[in-house]
Length: 280
Image 1 (tube, rainbow, N blue to C red):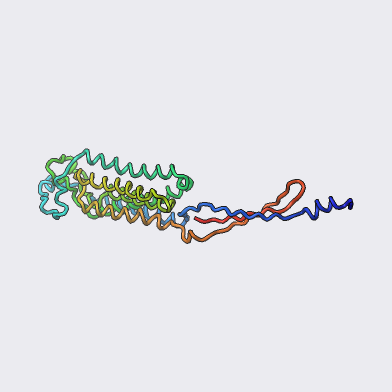
Image 2: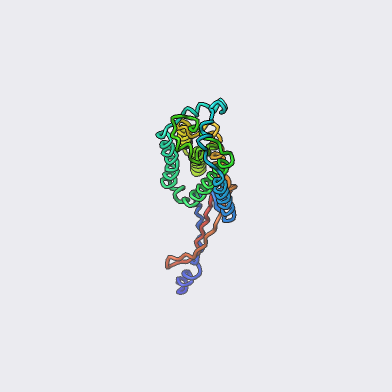
């Protein structure tokens, strides 16, 4: 028996390289933030917001004489029925349904693991959506200065008709925000859970709340149908567009990372290699 055999085995023949390749598929966020892009979007949101504030100072309230001279027959036939509507109750309920849509987005974000792990990205995108939505719709309001339908209704209080907001009907801010939230929520959920059977439920639920908000604004005498359609269009475009801008391209491509570490169990040594593969 060769007395050197154990030592040689320990330091030479048992010095084996163990190559262990483990394929670990890890979830990749469907969205990515980029500093330059986010600064540009936030800048655009701030610019439209400041523009809206400047324009708002130029909006003068209706006078009593102007209110008395209003004639609902001057309103296009499609919008005219709104002038017969007025209700504080429906007006307040529209705030509830809009807030419910925002709460739904929050619950999905915090209640689902992929979205909860990516809450900062979702949060930044939603803030950008809201900033742009409100900056755009309020700027247009203050340029158009359309008289709200309740101003034509003798049942509405004179004090509300004399308020500056009585001339900020087009487009609907509630519809803009509600549909921006609804489409944003549905699009984000669709991308985080592309195979989920709950996608139609999320779409129907979120758009249902947004539509209810719009209907309540109409029945409350706050907006004409065209105001609501315009707001829904603006909100939907931004609710879809902001996530689209942040969508990760070529998500089906596999990315690889090789991890190399020394390995030893006290009797033998080697190298441990792990190949991690990243995909959707």
